[in-house]
Image (cartoon, rainbow, N blue to C red; front, side, top):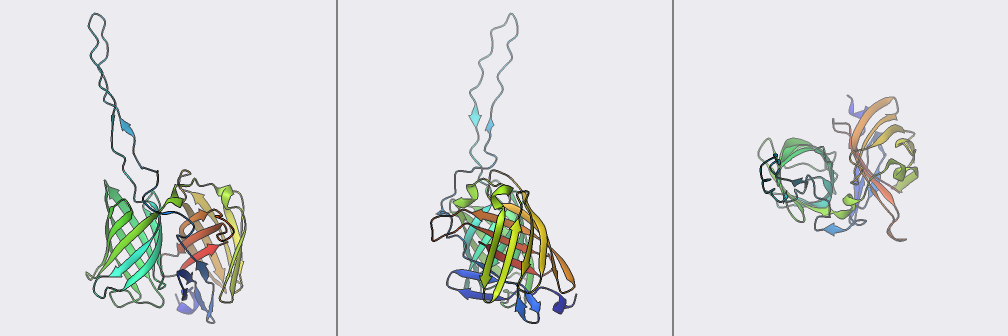
Length: 294
């Protein structure tokens, strides 16, 4: 597809905030603003333990005329903490030691999204065995270059689940490595509900504005200052944790792109931190949007 008809991300950085958008129409941008991690409690992993379950050893059945066998006491397996969560951390280029702050959402089904403060964006797919995490990634960028020297990359992900979060590396197909450290945000332990997202949300950044209306069933529509429209829905992945799926069609100047991704809801924490919805989505072909709806 002609790049003039695609949504190409543009980035501006202010302090710890991330502004990521999708430009490509006469130089305009449909960007977004995000300040991630400041609304939740970062640090040790929260109370949620995945697949914890208790494995009970079955006792012998009592047979008439025989003394009943002594039943064994229940045996509980140690909790297995999942790799899913809301994260804030860093990616460090192993060759240059350049460190980039990142935010990430990883769902229970292994689907993940990650955004770098330099405007890089990663689509993740992970699986887990005990505390070992493995998977693949695709990276997109409009400005910053990846370790392979280009604005796109792909490769493998390896990591370990640790008390703070995840620790591992991204290795591209040329063997270039970025060290990954992610801190778990306890906001992930909040329950999810589609009705919780309902309402009218908006943001304004660098002359760009977007207004989204979300219904109680998770469907939503939005319009932006570039005369582009959005139509899609949020979905529940697991109602006991704070991660939502998202799918929408972006219609802009004759082009239509389908975006999929993940979102999390952050409740109000005083007047300084209003409720907001963090969205990370892409079209799986290079266009992406990181948005903080307030």
